[in-house]
Amino acid sequence: MKSETVSVDIERVKVSRIQQVDFKNVAFGTVFTDHMLVCEYKEGAWQIPRILPYQPLSLAPSARVFHYGQAVFEGMKAYKDESGMVWLFRPEENFRRLNLSAKRLAIPELPEELFFEGLKALLHLDGEWIQKGVGNSLYVRPFIIATQPSVMASAANSYQFIIICSPVQSYYTKPIRLKIAEHYSRAANGGIGFAKAAANYAAQFYPTQLAAEEGFQQVLWTDADTHEYLEEAGTMNVFFRIEGVLITAPANDRILDGVTRKSVLALAEEAGIAVSVRSVMVDEIIMACEKGTLLEVFGSGTAAVISPVSALGYKNKVYEIPVCSNPYAERFKKAILDIQYNLADDAFGWRYKV
Ligand SMILES: *Cc1c(COP(=O)(O)O)cnc(C)c1O
Image (tube, rainbow, N blue to C red):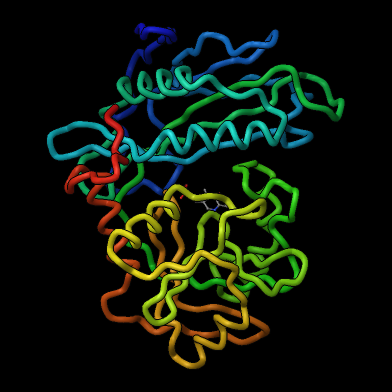
């Protein structure tokens, strides 16, 4: 396959595994398509990307990614419309953010054509793995790891950029319960909270386990200094609706600038909903909940699009959030899905044809 600037070497599988997949019963992120894209960085340059059968990697045990966590990733989805055309949703944003994350982790940035030509070639090859029907999609996971075989604690001189793809099914997302962080922190000023850096997630697992023991699915992170301001959840940005106003914290050093978050903000403004992007105090949200003016809380992220929140845990109390009528959560979810599946006009130019 050739493009104007980037060629992709392709080695196809001998036999596809697609017949063995029960698409209606795949657990999220457990089944992968026939192929993967691999591109090495060495001698100061990204090399020719290759598409290979999906297979284990061979890395030295001393590869730096294993010791220092020098790794970044992205998460996006490909969708198939009723006519069989395949679409991505705002992939330029994922590309831009991958390089932003890479830069912060001292990883060499990827050329744009390499990312897009590699991604498109892979999706063309494994297009059959994308099922039609709203909710069904192919989760696309690009990532970069430091491969230099040396345990010296400094930035590596060799890397691999890899894309793997996993079919995901339409699933009903139960409202989730969030525990407000009072002790642990996810990110600090000047740190890597804004990056999709592997280490951010490893650091969340233990506090999330503790929250799970109390019946919460995720931690709602607060600022590291005072724990008085709400920031975001594990893999989602968070919105609060107090009466008619939709509130979310501003994207900054500590908060990941979600593509879904941006899209919700744009849709809300277009719909004439009052939006307030500002610091959100824990006390303000708890008080609104007690007064009954906190009508909704929801998370936004690529995996579930919008996840309604049914309870907040704080200082050994649980604040239930009653289901409201005509929730914004449903409205935004539908609007975004309709654009993603080519069921509605794309006034913002968010769809990207593969
Ligand atoms: C990926 C992610 C999000 C959501 O970003 P989207 O681009 O909307 O998928 C939010 N917070 C964190 C920490 C994330 O890693």
